[in-house]
Image 1 (spheres, helix red, strand yellow):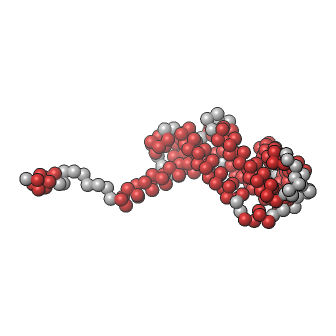
Image 2 (cartoon, helix red, strand yellow):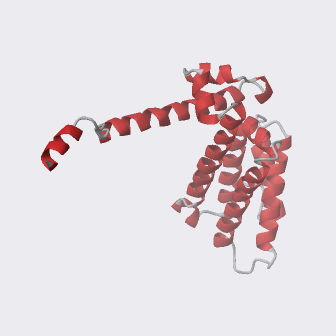
Image 3 (cartoon, one colour):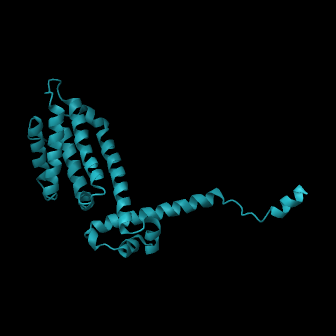
Length: 214
């Protein structure tokens, strides 16, 4: 009787999905999500956020508008997801830069030179997105926390190579100088050829390192 019942039930229950099929579906979903986020990032380099529509994002990603509404709800949902991914990836990149072994034997001038070049290039690449984040109260805190990270990294690197006779206010001075430099970058044309050199010289003078930097 038990075997008979089992035989009747067998075939009525849906079989469990095969793991490879589940993995493939998840990968397609992940790829579609990334394509939509990449699409908005690209469009932000071309025109203001207000001029970008849901259809623009979908078209650039090669997907339908339904894909956006299903995953994110609306354009703002896409933007918030872009912000989250951007902050995570940027923080990882900055920390990896600061952890390079080359800085252990570098001079203060070399560290400031590398930091300035990296900060300017970062601003050039992501200025539209950074401006959008800064003007959005929902993600302004994320923006501010991200922009504090370069100052902490520069402070840590210089502390490790500067003489032990450095003043007690050294770390605070470096952090302040780094934040000032980032603010300057946000106010100037980042494509100016001599901008990096000017900021390097400014940082050296504010921190108390021999300048000009080379």
